[in-house]
Image (cartoon, rainbow, N blue to C red):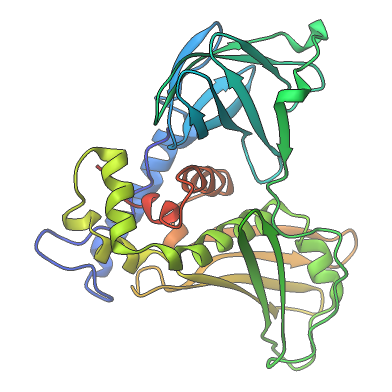
Length: 348
């Protein structure tokens, strides 16, 4: 799987408490984060490219690979040792593509059409244990028109916020509207709070322009992860970390530090810049001042054909583009528990 994006780390011997870092240290960290993103994510280093049958040991942690010009993420959902398993396969970015629950059985092939009409890859299980599935993934030329094994594939939509919902203007700074949807046993929500300048309210066109965008969908997905993190207890965190790194967390990676920098919620605030230009800001709530506050923003134009521009990231998302945020969502979701979003910041 892709390595975690490292958040600002306190100096050895210091606690990750709000306001303990100087601006100079934060500047160095910001440069390091950007360099890490470019080197580790944008260039896709250490992510294998599948051009022929390739073996992967799939666990409940996300594994990334390239195939046919696309990037995919895969992790284990359930397994019956020696018999079969269910794998979750995502074509990245997951923000605009569905997930696929793929059933595999020992020594049999399952042909999958991930992002294509005809099958473009096949997965076969070679060994199934209690915590992992050794599988072989091989490409299939989709132009061959080979039918997928549809009876073994379940499509799961990853967009958490309905994009066809009716949208009404928010009347004042004291008003707010919350949209939510449920996926499985968890519920994600994004609170849209109105903050106005120069009086008045923002028009419905602002949300109409914003909601179908990859930015809104990505940050709605992350908002769900932040909300779910309330269920991450120290015990669950320590167990999750131990399972991933085969050692107990300590120092920077302790629950105390990682939980402090991980937001527990995120709200969307919309303010007018001009009569036709509005700023949308996603504001995170976290214990640490390093990640508490505005985490991302975009400008939304409602003049002419409209448009979205000027995506910027701060705090928890500092130095990351929207593709990296999508990859972090996949990594967090791959842990299948409330501590997934905390593990994005934790390292070995």
